[in-house]
Length: 197
Image (cartoon, rainbow, N blue to C red):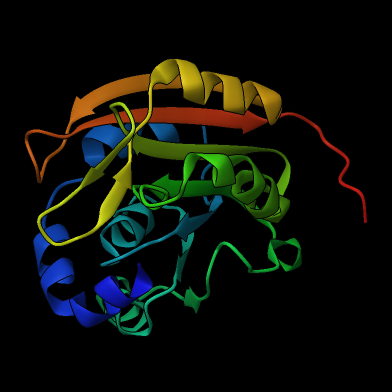
């Protein structure tokens, strides 16, 4: 799937960079301390990185597409790490919060618990997580061939409970880019967990 974003990086950048993320990021950042560090996973165009930075936080991007890494870094003036979140060793990082805005939409349902457990290694104990997922049943294939995994609130709630993630805030919003899409937004807090070494 990364080939799509690499091959269409300019079009993707232009289609996402100008939408205002305030409506879904404000409920998240109200839980954060001033100057909190945030890892924006799948940061894409860097739109949210810039917003976080402008609101007094210290964001770092994480993106798989090399071309988007460059564009996001230039646009936001933030550090952007190039990597694949499905295999990256997040235990080397430490952040106050994680942001997954649309970045898990292509992940098969069975892979979500493993990815969450892996990426949460980058969180300080008691850290915060923001996740948005597309609402629906099964999967959806777009005109461009991308396959999206759709979620119900019930299924996500169970996975978060199994991962010892406490739900602090929930929202349901239509997409700012595609009016037919509905996003489920969660602010989560990681309960104190000791990971095996």
